[in-house]
Length: 360
Image (cartoon, rainbow, N blue to C red; front, side, top):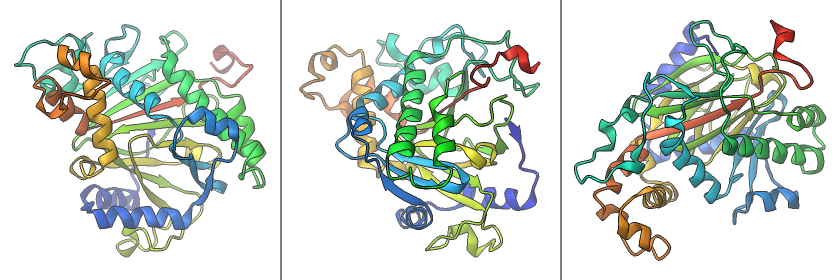
């Protein structure tokens, strides 16, 4: 990861989206702009539909020549729920992980006090966790000796996403497009080897940067968003024209190579081709606006109910007899989850058929 926000134009665009008021109309306008400028296709492979097990068919939005893909409804509610709870309750206490919190700590599964406040635990300080090859923030590199366990669930999900996209690039509606074969080949050989899981709290942001320290720069970078929605900025190789124009165009008409997206709970992005080394940023997390999303609210209440150690919850989860809002143990977790965006990105470090030592 190399930070590259020294450009005055990039800094200006980042600040614009950091301070923008994301009303319902503004979010709708951004979504309309994406629909007008991205290639949109529904997943047509029966194998993929069965894999996602969703009532809603998976949709793929792409800037195809850039190699950037946005997948919606690619993962089932159950898979998303497992990822969400695991990221909150299990991963922070894995001993082989690295994080910005220099301490091993447990999560809420052990609480039983009516005075428990989730945000007073070490979780309020947690900003990132790494798995597999641990990214060395000071040296901006990976080291073969700095490698931990890669979570099986995250490896399985990221591989499934790569396989889903490969199938659609090979046999679906995307197969007829140029570069489809090249992208599919990169997805077919994808091996999850390193992950950074980011915990964005409230006003947490991430400046423009590139993910370019991996030796394999052709393998996809797979990213899953959970929790609060976030604004994602992508710098493209070629200008992208949308209708209506992207919000920043009125202020910076020459910035036609910056694309803003709203990434919501369950959205998946895959960066291949040119976009694999593109600069990107996260200038804002939409905490208050997310509460208007009934799907998200329902998901976080279900997650809290499943995680709660309250005896009545354990007895009545299936029947949904207990209102989550009334539980003094669930409320702190809900408050944390609704104000936190979790992004788990997965990448391959070493090209297939090679060894780490081949590059050092």
